[in-house]
Image 1 (tube, protein in one colour):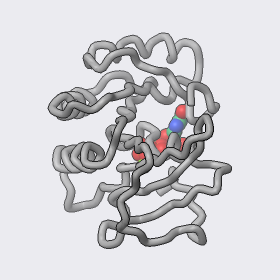
Image 2: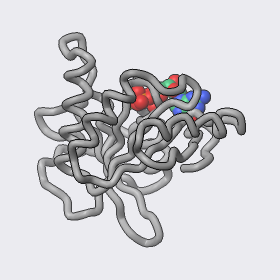
Image 3: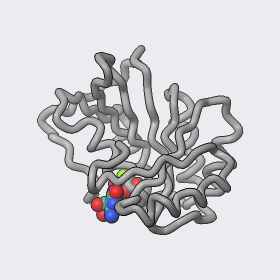
Length: 169
Ligand code: GDP
Ligand code: MG
């Protein structure tokens, strides 16, 4: 997977639950979830784990923010030939909701609003978890401004980011 640049030497298998505040990154494929994850954990002594028996289902990392350790989950590795789109999204949302204190709902400011984004928003609304709407690939001012269209999802203010240029992260 092109978006993943993990150091496999640091990988461990862990089934332990964590008391750390946890952020889950959800969104349709190719919006930049893994790129954002990598930006968050990069340069830290990040512990990247894959859960035993669920390899590629979710990838855990940690980073420090204002002196606090924060755990982040990339739920994006769930695709496969036997996984249809709606099922993939449903599982991703379920995994996120089971473990996260905060959900980063990532959309693509280059593509604009899609039917899949609306589907994810509908599923997220069923849970009482705080959601931060992230409009990634806002690589320039035009795209950052166009991200206001995502207000339509009813998920609050869209936050423009560019994992590519490291803005908004
Ligand atoms: P995921 O499927 O949501 O995990 O998406 P990835 O992180 O794998 O990114 C999908 C593609 O979008 C890759 O080719 C990334 O290099 C690219 N990408 C990610 N973030 C950005 C960004 O901020 N700007 C641009 N232009 N491309 C990005
Ligand atoms: Mg990914």
